[in-house]
Image (spheres, rainbow, N blue to C red):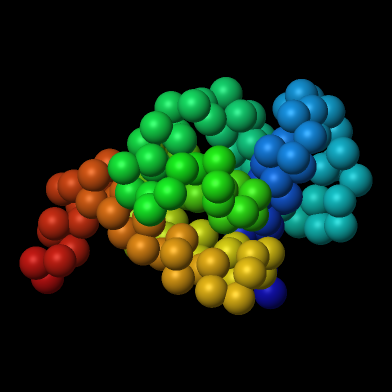
Length: 144
């Protein structure tokens, strides 16, 4: 059984995928997500924070991700891009969630929604990003 947090990440990823493809306003995407299967099982506060936070900060999150990528962010698949944006937002703003949990959740999202090896790419990018955004936490984990 999926946790409410995982369900909220899945819905946020689906909403961001739609946003990346359509450019529709966040409120419109939010309204459509409310009809999605499993919406009632999601952590709605976390979903709201992720969806609207990522849309609001997409440029800054993309700038954080860019040095960790091997190609321009616009060339990533919309699924990988949505997953990376959700994880970057969590790494930056939800320090209560351990960085390894953020990476693991992103890898699971990439496996669920992405291409066959997309999760490996997501894992590598987020390893680099977490070392930058959560330097103290990642260094402590590597020492232990």
